[in-house]
Image (cartoon, rainbow, N blue to C red):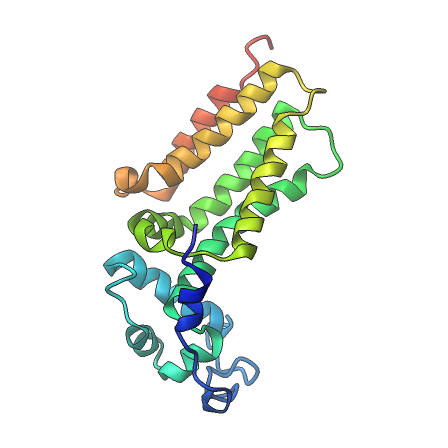
Length: 221
């Protein structure tokens, strides 16, 4: 889903000797990060707020730097372009899927295990709820991006989830319920966009959990 690689390459990062030292770039190694996070993560957090509130196209690298009280070269030390910042934010979404897949490794999946997995996944997604809102509000910019490692990562996550859902050792009824419950989580937090923007994370999380429990409930129990 991304911009041609040539377009990304055309956005030139500053020459190597123009880039700041580690102290100028935010003091990653010198303890200059008061919040304890790396400068790179602070850049992403500020960009997330700006891209969500005013849009990717309306946000400049200078604005990001000013919010952080650092220079533009300090931004370019970590990211060659604004598009790379957007891609890095999008890649945070993949971490949700990877963590869930790690829990599936080496065990037989049941509806109970699947429900527990989705509960953890929901906690992670609610904690990063703004990423989904940013994604919804900047779809046009995201669709212009392209990077092979992103596409490969995305396809791998999808394929591994499909393999879990296609496991013939599980009853078909259970596998269908697992697929539908996964849709309930992503539908409630991602595909709904701004529809629930005025609902608190605590309330929305509780309602989504209710929906998941309804889907995976074993009516024969």
